[in-house]
Length: 359
Ligand SMILES: Nc1ncnc2c1ncn2[C@@H]1O[C@H](COP(=O)(O)OP(=O)(O)OP(=O)(O)O)[C@@H](O)[C@H]1O
Ligand SMILES: [Mg+2]
Image 1 (cartoon, helix red, strand yellow):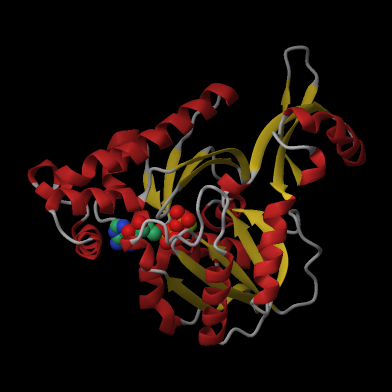
Image 2: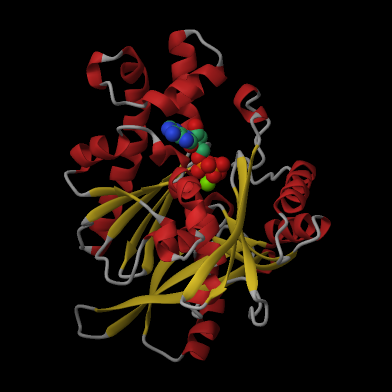
């Protein structure tokens, strides 16, 4: 999606530029499948104290100079072999729409799309780059087969910004992809019936419904990890860093008995309520029930969140394990257990060339 054919290179960098961190997974082709060759993570702690110091903001402003600096540092420090980057774009920076069309040839879909597109995006067609993929089909009331198409439009301005950042960092931007497609590859598989994937980041939570390996629905909210930390800092009257530490160590394990949990719970509930809302919308639109929930992102590492979410959803809830899809050197085992769901997007991007040819 939004890239050229990726042939040739022996390894690729999956680059996840989050609001507060950059994560890179270098993935190559091992003898028995995709293999982690190297990885790097850089967190910008500045954001914790100064709210305006995020790398990425939901107003589409990506802090170019800061990002270039961080990327350069990370590339230098990590000694990656490849310079070929496959990069994610947060869902708030793209327009994602699902719609139906009568069954037709791909070339005809492309033509028909030119006429349809105006009604789905709020920008003139000349100002966006579009890509689409078939995600399923449905028989309508009259018995006609309808093709379900996922349309992704990214403003050209955003693409240009990413190009500038990567070229200034000495990397080649090979492909840009929305986060949910990377998550689809790293934490779900084609055998799974409708699955709600909730990626709890620092500044935003990305929620997707993925059915049998196809992204069906995407939703994004600002309710996320940073709001939990801020609530704790405010409630306890402690510094943000201390609050962050307490959140990571204790989480919501204490239940309603603990002051910590009591302070954090409303914010955890707000995130889960947004996820429930997305689930409801999907179920209403598709007449199909979500059967399980997978948590990802740094926020899913909060102690106690998975059992709590399970109670709330009344469905099986697991924490995504992107490393289960790839091979890695055994010596990395302890680090990998720690990184876990935080690397879901970076790995989903890095394995793109080795796992499917379709996007
Ligand atoms: N053990 C933990 N317990 C609770 N929260 C955690 C833990 N580890 C990380 N987090 C939280 O996860 C968030 C960072 O997650 P992640 O790295 O996925 O964010 P990001 O990708 O930089 O941001 P975004 O996706 O919003 O752009 C922070 O809010 C952090 O406090
Ligand atoms: Mg993220």
